[in-house]
Amino acid sequence: MVKQNVHRCGWVSSDPEYQRYHDEEWGRPVTNSQQLFAKLCLDGQQAGLSWITILKKQQNFEQAFYQFDPTKIVTMTDDDVETLMQNPGIIRNRLKIQSIIRNANGFLKIEEKESFSDFLWQFTGGKTLINRWDSFRDAPTKTAESIAMSKALKKAGFNFVGETICYAFMQAVGMVNDHEVNCHCYQACCDEAVR
View 1 (tube, rainbow, N blue to C red):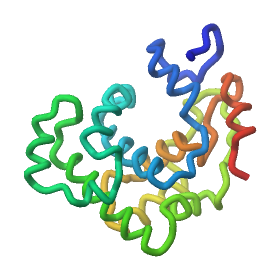
View 2 (view 1 turned 135 degrees about the vertical axis):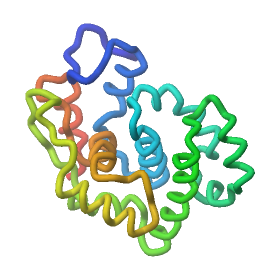
View 3 (view 1 turned 120 degrees about the vertical axis):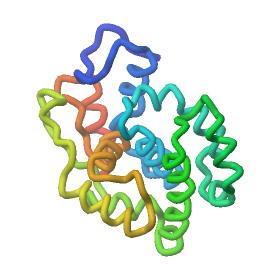
């Protein structure tokens, strides 16, 4: 349920779907490995596009990629890629489609040693980093943590995981709380923060 007449972060538009995403998901800590994988893949799809574009196609991506189950995604073939290139419900970019398959292989490689969640959360010391921005424009686009995460993911075989994508991902999954301090979600995300 989208709240009316509340103060939100300045990047949020008047689109009800965008407001719901901001109010209920963005900045809330996610520790489930498969959910983190899905979000990282979706953030990679955003490269060069707006997040609202991806958000509106999220269900189509979930249907196209087996609800982001890496064990099923790794079985996808070149024929599957060609089929997806004809799917108007997703971003029809061959490199981005192939990146989800590539990233699923990277996910399984990491999971052989540790949970994907532990692997990602190590970059914030296993806790939410709480910031205090008056405006979303004050937040950085990359940090030492996102640079380290990007390098480690690339080493594990991932792509579309640059430093800026990784920071946007960290914001989205509550590894950092970058809600503006006067946003109605700021305190709730502080309360939910992983400590």
